Length: 170
Image 1 (cartoon, rainbow, N blue to C red):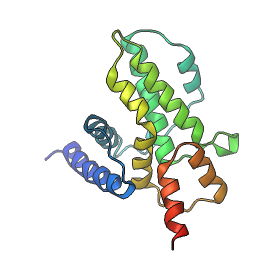
Image 2: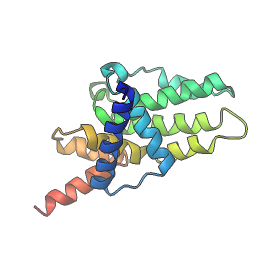
Image 3: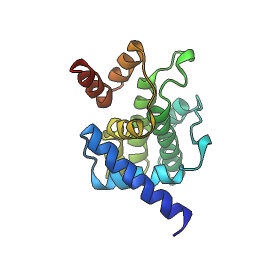
């Protein structure tokens, strides 16, 4: 078994467990995409790098395969950041909602970079918050301040809402 196959198997198990914990049910193709993305970045700690040029990429909308690839790569960065380290740019006034909005917009833009529009990219944009929540449950075990939880809820986090409901009953 190759290293990548081991990563895929491990990520598959992690995603299934996280979906169960969050009571989320990702579409099969979205689930497979997320597993592949996590496996691809499994041993790459530098996968979490943010460039403020992401918003510029959203503005330069063109129809081509290279534009689609750039949008997808930027959306994947937003997904990894929003799931792993949503408060990485908080000192600059950029909260988790920014990464969620950028990721959704970039996947949506990628969908329209080719004709006919790519329905799978549209589905990724639609399920961005759910994918982010699954990634968050897998990797994020840190305590959040009340203000940080409010920001996550504003960024459509269902995990944060479930977590707070669970704590209210304890």
